[in-house]
Amino acid sequence: MKVRKFRTRRMWSNTLLMLWLIPFAVLIGAIAVALTDSLLALVGIAAVAFIGVSIALFRDIGNRSTYIVGTEKLILHDGRNKLTVPMSELVDASMINRMAAREYIRSKSSGEGKSASRMKASDLIKDLTRFCSVDLGLTTFTFGMGRSMIDKMPQSKNDLVLLRLRSGKDYFLSPIDNVELATTINRLIGQMH
Image (tube, rainbow, N blue to C red; front, side, top):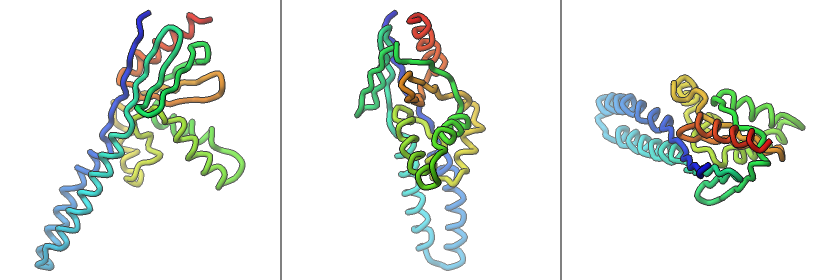
């Protein structure tokens, strides 16, 4: 088998939500200008909108990763870090949606105590999503509005791949062609046994 290269998908949900909210903010600013005869409110709303869109863009661009699947190994590369996993170390690759991914993280992070669990959960999220470019909805800054919007989008159904290793480590991957990545990895794992 030749080496297959997969790239991560980009989801612009935070940016789209902010861009949808800007017309409402401008309307509120126009009403404030009409009532106060001062452009200060409109300038303030424009500044907040600019900062909001900038943060949303930064969050949506996130990290871009590459997944390289060969017959002997899988290479996960996020631009800064590179992880090489022998095929013999892989258990499976399963397609999963974001709601199930959040529940998976919650179930893995439940444990010792509230503060210990919260600390463990944040470390777990960073580790699990190290090579994932889409927002699972755990770190969104839209107070849950973006999460429910993302979960209902048709392209968000099973858009993640859960990669499980024999060592107990797991990674969420977000390839553009998730079905092909999961199928390729599982076929190679099957050929190893």
